[in-house]
Image (cartoon, rainbow, N blue to C red; front, side, top):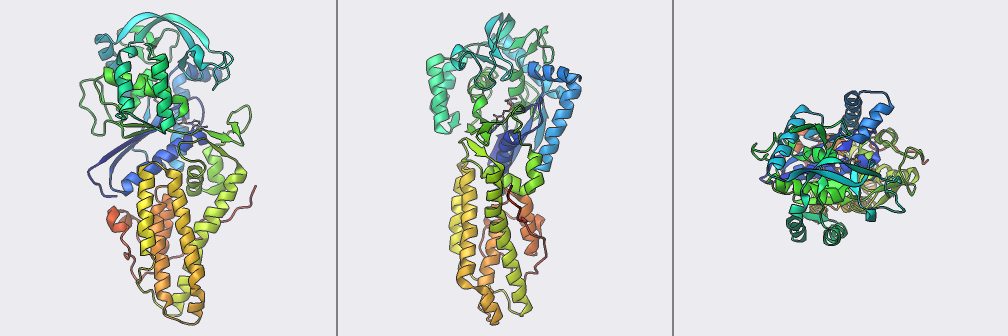
Length: 509
Ligand code: MSP
């Protein structure tokens, strides 16, 4: 898509390389992809970063458990993530791995700067640590003495450590959050963070571990490795090619939007901005916190055997439909609950009987019409409806209302279904009535518009619909946004191409 002047830099968390991708990490990544694609569609200059977080105690232990060298282990998992994202048609611009030597060098340089500045000092760290979260916990975070996410008692850590003077930046960060200079959405998440700052304040953080060998060594004291979060956060910079303090600020810095779920909001709203302030770099513009997915009302876990992999979805619904179903499964920003039954139901209702059936019906009607030597005839009856739909569509996606954009698409499919029912074009074809030319033009031109509305969610479907309409995908994608949503671009002399059903019906599970 051609560019306009504004930049859009979007990130996902980098996922721990201790387990294979599942629909939780797929959800964030697909959401980021839809938003990246939408921003490309409207002409922004987009950079989309994702990757894997490969150091730390948790991964070290997991590699040992399966009797592998840590590096070999993370290589395999990172490849699985990349494979999954490629299968899901994720259009990332870079996939960053924290074991990449360039990343390691930049992290070391950043820590040296912070150390020399006096923001990192040597001390004795005492605190509770949850290895599952790779995070320090206060008593207040625990429920019955256990980490609420991992249901295990955190270990008491007491060791010599280099400590990051995060407390120094507490006031500035809080003020920036309050002024929305560092926007946190949804609003309740912002309030939660503000109240955390006001009640608990920002304590200094242990930034190194002596006992963990699988990590980045501190350049000035190699008996310590870097705390995994300090290492991980800098991916958002090194993923853009940043080589460390002194290097010029990357073109795309700062991030426009950082997506994540609530499990890692607090660290992103405390340690991360504090590190940036220490490094004299601008803070991200926005952190958006989407909900958590449950499966049949329960947290996904290996022991419950309810982990759904993205491949399970792809096998059942195909790539595009999997993306669409996941994005439509929850209000973006709220928790969601999925089950195969619900997914099947939605697939059949919105895709097989919805968009798929609409396209199939329209094509069959057009072919019958052309056979009768009746021609398409440019008309504008549905122009207004699509003009309005585009405005709401852009508004929804600019405000990150992904599910609302999907509802809008479904609504427009309904508009077309009703239009067909109302005008009964098959009767006009039968009667060789040329008035059908205008009706079918409205329908086909609407399909062209719909094909672009679904593009951020289902790019292959766009390709297929355009092909059916005799249009060239590459050429159409080179149009700028105003051109492509102009009513009447579709020629009257199109040649319809054949395609199999877009979304074959499936038997419900
Ligand atoms: N490695 C850290 C992040 C470092 S970023 C500097 C990490 N990794 S993680 O693998 O645990 O990923 C957590 C993120 O995965 C969540 O914040 C969310 O984006 C996504 N999800 C994991 N499980 C999820 C659900 N069940 N539902 C929704 N999102 C989920 O934390």
